[in-house]
Length: 578
Image (cartoon, rainbow, N blue to C red; front, side, top):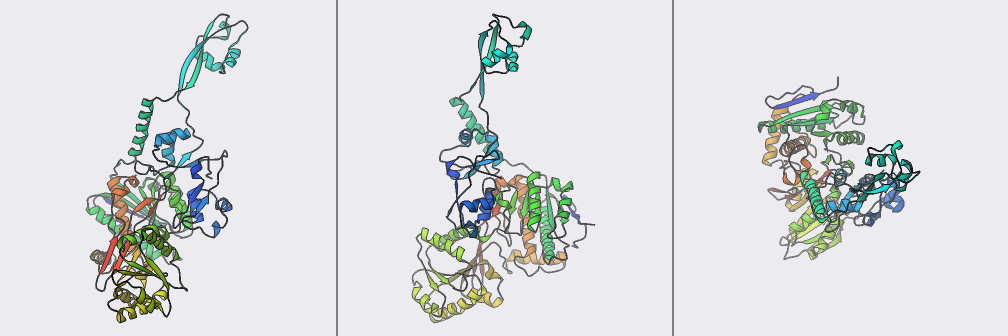
């Protein structure tokens, strides 16, 4: 399909192409520190709590140079008039209602401050935000006492005696007039006291709070799914523009499949021109079509993503960031979905998957002194192995590596060799050593475990990896001989008259996989589909997609990944997003 052509599908599908002619902290003692999770940075932690990086680093010297997983950072505490939230860690046996009473805040106000709070996520150890400045007034009980007017008393003097306003006194005595205030007249004096909830009241309020948590899990159907795609398709200064076009083309193939199921969709495609400017984008966001969408997908530069993120939050539209992996909007905007998650955020899950798959193996790490770009992953994996009491050892890549490996390999259990770098330089040094070891000692069995970039190296390295029984993790993987991939490639060429670009990942497939995911989840679970993510599974051809909230008030990151196993004549791909 020609990119500049208006595309209209028949039936229930309609596609339009539109082209250009300060949070601070309060009292709770358990919220003064933050334990650093793998993949977090000082900047991302500051973004999560909406505090300045300067303030965070002032309390944690050296944090500006990097923070390590497991470290505890001190968070700024304040009780100034500008406070918006305090942070509360849910304790054992606490309920939403009991937390609301603890802070004298309405249950609904806590719900509004934590978009991710449901019956499933209100769990011990989770952190939630408690809004300040919205303190709930306790329920009042009105009773009366009586006052006999004395000589010389006035409405104002009597009101002062009982700490009332004159208006409150006259309201309680509607026939009272200043001229009729005579000695001996009996007046009703209103008295207010705080109502102490009875056991029955507490039970009712507990159930009401619980029902609010359950309410968020109800399906609200959508008859026509509306999605907008916004990319710099025609930016001649951006070498990536052809990739965005291919992403769109793959997405439209997913739309065709959606239509074949009998579903209805409206897809609006906008060219936002320059990859760095936001002027065209800001103008497009004023159009009526943009305000009625269920899902927004797009943005390339940090500034564009920021504009779209803000727009999505105001208009309550789910916003998908498909490419950028360094944006922290998902940490603080509950409408953001980040597809391309930094791998270091996934290391704990990848390490645990390694432990589960190779629990009976002996693990040998090979360190390359010139390349240690995978030091964070190696540290995560070593920690997981130690926790699960799985033996491992480390050696240095050198001229003696073959002999050292030969002495270390177990004859009774599988052996897994893990290099400290994913670089082709390290691989080209290590592969000959392993080939010689396999040739000289064919009885010694071992496998190689490594990294996503290995799938992008030349055919000679690929062939060698297969002969060495290699495994690696990746969020994106497509085997050319995979049946679904072959069918898609043929279909793409028939539809658009050319092959998919030879890039990693393949943008046509990325568009197709994300299109399938969001079209079908909106149709199945409605505009507020995020409360049903655990019920939905997507079989991507190239992409492992599985979203979870970054925190109870933030957005979503993709936690899906594959383990790929290169055999000599076959490839195995295990989807850990399910």
